[in-house]
Amino acid sequence: TGRARGSRREVLLPLLFATLILSRIAEGEPYLNQPRADALVTIQRLVFDDRFAEADSACQEFIASDSSDPIGYFFQAVALMAHMIDREDPVAPARYDSLLDRADSLALTRLAHPDSDARSWMYLIRGHIKAYRSIYESRFGSFTSAVRLGLGAKGEYLNGLREDSTNLD
Image (cartoon, rainbow, N blue to C red; front, side, top):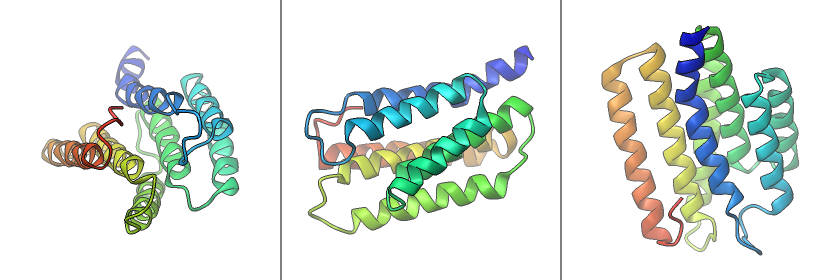
């Protein structure tokens, strides 16, 4: 429906932002190599084409290649969110929360290592996690929670900039 298409933009535009961020990976970037970034672009394309089951399978393959990387779980949650908005029904909120919780936990684990080259990326991922929780709340839950989570996302993005001021994505 027109309403579903318009509200799906709430999910798809941040996903596009996340993918654009990943497409700017510099040569030799320690966090994601080009094949993994390409896999994320493929997942994005599947979500944009409403091929949610295929996107979920691609996310599972991505996660299987490195289960300690939070971004696979994050993208799987994004694909699920797009599916829920497409249906205009929160069909799997517990799974959505579980995927975001797992991504957040893995990002926090990587942040616990002060010498990690990926610290700014982990803050970026944590910001995206809070942003997507905010989108969920704005669509299916509480406006107040959506605002609180949105402000939390901003804080994570600022933390990432403090780690690496060149990571302006």
